[in-house]
Image 1 (cartoon, rainbow, N blue to C red):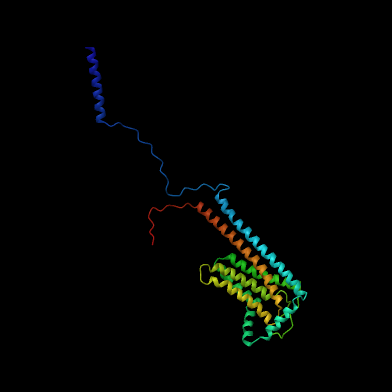
Image 2: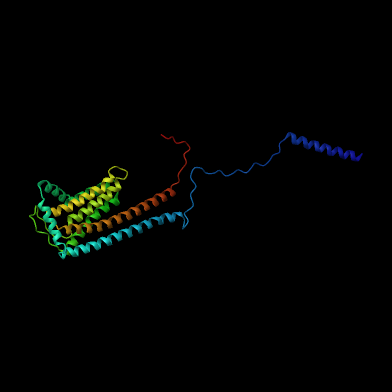
Length: 300
């Protein structure tokens, strides 16, 4: 009797529990909310580690600078040896027959048309003309924000003029007096100022134009045109009998040495300027976060 009564109580309790589970849902605690990811800006990248790829990229221009300096030094050393050898022979009258013979040969073939062409060539090699041309070109480069090119052009022209006067005062070679002169000239003869000035100024103009005309059809004509002008200016000075041929060669060699120095300096300055600009823009991009746009951009 007692066992039946206990069984009845247990059965009633189980039925009541089942009814409660069927009529009500168990109240479970809400799941923990995940932190919302901020998509309004890019995650800041970690700072570059020493010895990483950023350092390797920054060290890369140093290899180019070293190679450029080595090539420039080798060229200047070779040209300087040739210049000294030429100057020693010219001042010692070693090439007197060649110098005098070429002046007389050109004078014997002079014509009015040829004289007019030679006068034009010698005029574009005048210091005043070169200075005006360099000044106008440098002003144009400055207005186009190409400050490195403008500074290199001005320094090349000014430095070449100073170097020529120093060399003339050092060697003090007297000008030739074999033919009647079309115009008066003053100063010493070696090395030729017209030849050296043409080499430096027109050579540097060719370098700058080669950089400016990248991707244009005019670019391949830059160096041939500059070469013809430089050779024409030197030939005109011998044609009029105001310089020995060795004076012209000496001017070319001295001008080539100074031009090579200016080209090396220009390349290094350009690389340093580009490297500084790149790192400045990179630092600015890290300081200014870039926000995502919610709307889709339309491409036209």
